[in-house]
Image (cartoon, rainbow, N blue to C red):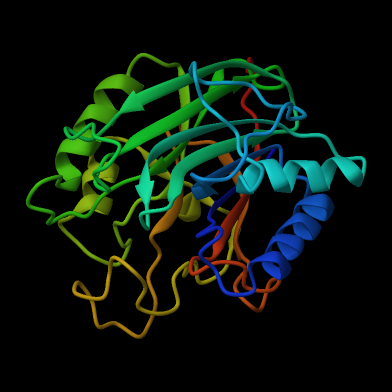
Length: 279
C-alpha cells in the first residue's frame, strides 16, 4: 500500500491554483491508497456545496463550502476518472476567515470514521484547539489511518506531552494504527516529542524504510517556528508512524522542488509498505 501525508497550507499559499493543479497531477499519477492532509481550509463566508462526490461525513452539521481544498482536489481528480472517498473535520478558525481542518482521502470506500480530541482546549475560536481524524477502509479493515497535527513541545497552554498522552490512551483501543501528519516535533531534536513517541513503542516508517532520502519536510523557517528555531538545515516534522513494525519498502519526500514542485510551506511524505498477513 502507498500512503501520503501533506500539510497543505491551502488557500493561504501564493499561486494557490497552480499548486492545487500540481498536487492533483501528482495524486493522479501516484494514486496513494490513503492520503492524510492538514491545514485543509475553506472560506467561512463561501457558499456551501449541494453535493460532494465521495464525501463521508465524520460528524453532523459540517458544511462543505465551494472553495474547500479537499473538495476541489477530489472534484478535479474525478474529472480525470480517479475516484477518492474522503472526509474532512473543521477544527478552528484560521487567519480570522477560514474553517481550518484536517482530512483523509482513500481509494477504497471508508467503513468508519473517528474523531479524537487531543488538546485540552476545545474552542473553535482558539487556534490551539487540536483534534485528530481517523478512518478504516474496505481495503484494510484492520488498520486505522489518522491525520494528525499537534502543537509544540514547549507551548505553555497546550504542550505536546498532553496531546500525545490523549492520543496514546485512545490508540490502545485499535489493533493497528498509522499516525500521519505534522507532528511539530523535529526528528533531529532529542528529549522532546519525537523521542516521546519512540519510547512509547511506535515505529517511525522513515527509520524502517529499506529505501529513503534525507527526509527533510520543512526547508526553511515557517509560521509557528519563527520564534523557536533559527536552523537553516531544515526539519523532519512531517512523519508517518505505525503501531507495528511493518515492512516499509520506501519513504521519500515529495513536493520539495526536486521530487515534484513545491505546493505548500511543508513538503509531503510518501511511504510504500507491504501489509502484514491476516490484515
